[in-house]
Length: 154
Image 1 (cartoon, rainbow, N blue to C red):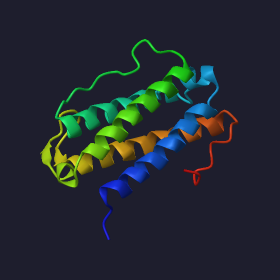
Image 2 (image 1 turned 45 degrees about the vertical axis):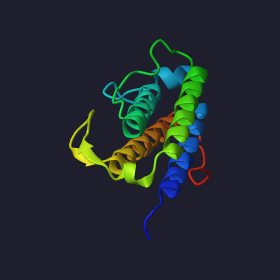
Image 3 (image 1 turned 90 degrees about the vertical axis):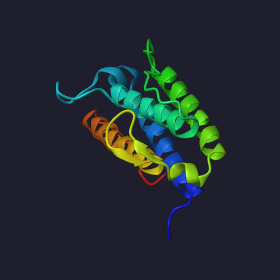
């Protein structure tokens, strides 16, 4: 059995709730500054990427408006990161519900990152990217001596 559009969205929603709880677990300064190695980015930079990709993709998929922009320009407080993340997700909820499943099957060149793919595959990539970076955030939390949110609570 394949996932329906709404099944997939529920998976996206559960993952976002967990990501928001990971953000909340970080102390303010560590959210913006902590990295276990100079080659790695702070969790705040990963959240920027997650949410900016989501915004760019949902506007492109739903409205055919392909623009990748930094939704966090000038933002330096964790509370504001949470608020912007929630605002982008609210927009995603609205646009996702307005789309039909046929729209998710459209195949085209990726306007931001790479090869031709379906809109569903594009949104799946965004979800996998979020999961990957959240896992890095969980590792950062553990290195800071902070227990990450329970993975199974969505």
